[in-house]
Image 1: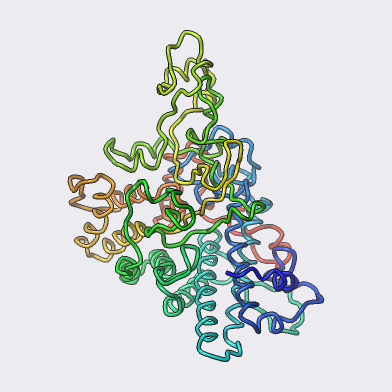
Image 2 (image 1 turned 30 degrees about the vertical axis):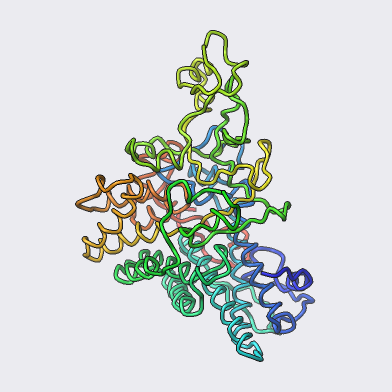
Length: 527
C-alpha cells in the first residue's frame, strides 16, 4: 500500500469522530464528499489502507491486545493481570463486573471494528461506481473490492461471535439527512452478509503466492473465513469444501515447528513463511505504532535472584496472561510443539546474585525448588518462572531491547495448519472420518516427527484437544468453545480465574452502553 498522507487527512473528515457515530450519523458536518476522495485509485487504496490500521490497532492497546486469548480453558491470569484495567483483559478473563456495558476497552473494540466497516463500505461502494479507464485500473479496483469484502467479513465475524446482536452499518447516500436509528440485525442476516462477501471475495482475490504479501487478503483468507463461518452455521459440507480449497491452494506448505513463529530474515523471511495465510503487519519504521502482544505472556522471571533480564530469557516481562494448568496436561513429553512453542524453564545467567547456600552456576536451570525457597511461601512470587507460551515473543530483530514493552513482529491471524484441524472437524461431522483422520494425523506427524502417534479413531474431544495443542494461545479458542456450546463448562473446569464467576449469559458480550444510549436498542440478556 502506498502512503497517501494527504488523502488520509481528507478521509478522516468523512468518518465521524465518536465510535457509535460510525453507525449513526447524528449531526451535519462540513465534509469533503466521498465522490471527490474515492474517484482515484489512490483515494480508494488510502481508504482501504485505513482498514488495516484500524483493525490491527487492537494489538496496540495494553488493555485489549490479547482479548481473543482471554476467557477460555487454556489461559489463566498472569501474576500481574491486576495491573490491567478491570474492564480490559482482566474482566474478559475473570468474567467479573469488569465485563460490563460500561467497559471502556470493550467499547474501544466495538468502535474500532465499526470504523473499519465504515471504510470497507466506502471502498465497496466506490468499486461499483469507479470510472475505470483501462484494464489495469479495472483489475486494481476489483482487487480492492475483494480485499474490502474479505476484511468486512472478518470484522463482522468478530462482532457477531462476540456480541451476536449487532447492527448492520449501512452507508447513507451523499446528502442524506442524519439518522439516529441503528436497529440490531438478526444474527442470520449478519451471517448471510458474511457468506455473500466471502463468496465474492474468493473470485476477486489472488492466491497468496500471487498476492502482495502475508498482510494482504488472498483467496486463502477468504476460504478460511468461509471455513469458520460454515462451521458456526453447521454447514459441514461447505466447511469441508473450504478447507480443501485451502489445502490444495498451492500457496502454502506446513513448516518445521521452529520456523512458523520465527523471525529470521525479518518481514521477508520467517515472518512471511509459507504456512501463514494472513497476519497483521507491523512496521518497525513506524515507531509510534508498535504492537503490545509480545510481552503479555512473559512472567516476571528477572525478579528471581540469579536470573537477569535478557532478550534470550524473554526481555521485559509483563505477566498479564499465563497458560492454564489444564493446558499443560494436553502435551506428551515427546510432542515437538511442547518445547518449540513454549519456554519451560529459566536458567541462571547471573551467578554472582544466586541466593546464598545454593550451588548454581551460569547455565544451570533455576529449579522449582530454588524458586520456591526464594519465594518463601509467597504464592505470587513462586510463579515467576512458571512455563509459558512463546508464540508471540520477539527478540532483537527489529531493534527491540530487553527494556522495551512492545515490539514490531507481525500478529499471525490464520495459518495453514488451521485448515487441517478445522477441516478434520468438518469432515468428521460430515461423516467422512477417513479424511478427517488423514488431515489431523498430518498435523500429528509433524508434531512428533514420526507416524507413531496417529489417531485411529476420532470424537469431538479428541479433535478439541488437538485443536488446543496446535492452535492454543493464537486467539481462536473462545470462538471454538462457544460454537460447540462448551464455553461455560470448560471455563468452569479449567480457568482458575474465570471459572468461579462465569455465567451462562456471558457467552455473548454486553453491547457498549454509549451505543445503547444513542440508538435505544435492547441490551443483551443478563447485562
